[in-house]
Length: 596
Image (cartoon, rainbow, N blue to C red; front, top):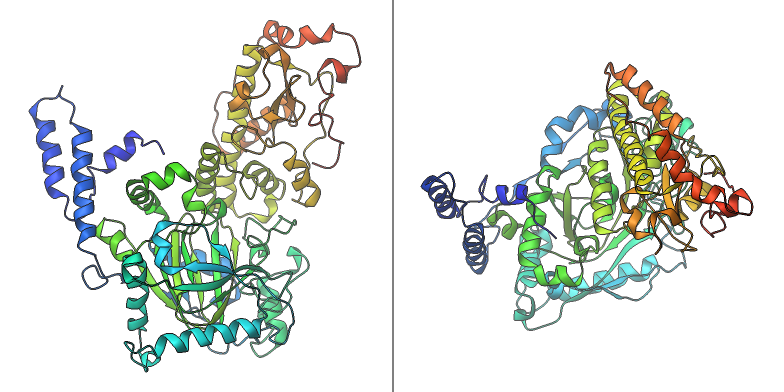
């Protein structure tokens, strides 16, 4: 990854303990004369040398203690509405990246896992001694729930009865011996002299297998605080209606995924996680930087670590420094979710890390962009899903830009979701609506300016000849997702929601307006603009937003009539139907007019 000037500045601001000498050198060099630029390469080399010196000391939880993330205990009244409760505690909680939520007394949902089911789920084989190498996982065996639990318990029994291990480790209040075992294996890697392999049942689709919670509501409109308040904690119907039921929370009032009807396993519908001793969920943040919630149904505790979203860049900086070669081989390394780094090392290098231990019956919530990871102390079963609150919108834009720079397809189309939220603005409170309108304005203005630039370069305007199917934004359903799959930018994998450019020389590709030069091989005149949202409609949207926000900003200037005519005339005089003249005989442009 390219390092920005901001990243360079971070190296001389708020540096971790142990780098004071480097900072003093930088300041001394700056004081020599205003015209003399510090030797950043030398400073960086010394900083990296100091990093490596710190790591050679093998930081541990004793030399670099890890502070606990907070736990919250809502009252029964507060527990009625998960989104409102998380908003209530957010100012304190988000600074930790991860938190624990302990339900009020009386919360006792019956675990819905079918222990007698003959269904087998897939696992991944994790070499714990290679987790710092970020190697892909091999496929493990397939198990029923009973078979997996039996295997996991046998592994743990064997580990606890090793000659060099105390048999009574399970009685330790903080599971400290197993904690040290785990990080000793991860940190020392091949030096431990043996292979330690476990099998992890991750990303098990609850819709295909089982959810530990009762079936949730069939419609977002059926969910409400009032409905839950009318039920008691000893009524099974309470758990079917509760927002803390992970089948419901993505659709709960206040979640910005509420109108995303198309199921996205692991995002708006839950995944199960079957763990065993040392089974690992390595460092990662969520798709699209969503918030997430994890519930521990049964079994041994899980050890969690979190880095707040505001410090995500510091975490990524450490990865860039120490995994340069691996990043050259695998640029999307952190998206692979197979890299584990000791929290003590991260703390030694200036990354703030918090920890918590999750036990059965407890929730863990992660906030937007927060990195998190951890491992299990034995057999357990958890369940997790995403949701999104208004505070996510600012992070959503960052995630979208990150995906575009990396050429990675987003799980959820950012632009479509923003326009869907606008179509359902009655769902939103005033602060959420303001954030949404600001983001919509940014999207619309960028698109109009990019259209102007493309037309000025000679890309043809064809909206007067042929109009693609209009975007339908009331809800995100399966048809909408299928249509979006056909208009993904060939360069950056962004879903082209408002407009795109296609070419007569390519039968399959479109590009977003940032990458006009990437589509086709011909001159700009061989390319044409597809406009799903007409300019008039976007200009009206911007004017509406400005009126609602009480601001008056100039609209992007329209192309001159001469430029517009020049952009459209070369092909209007050609023979054939308007579709053929405009080059719409391609597979992409000729897509049937299904609901968009």
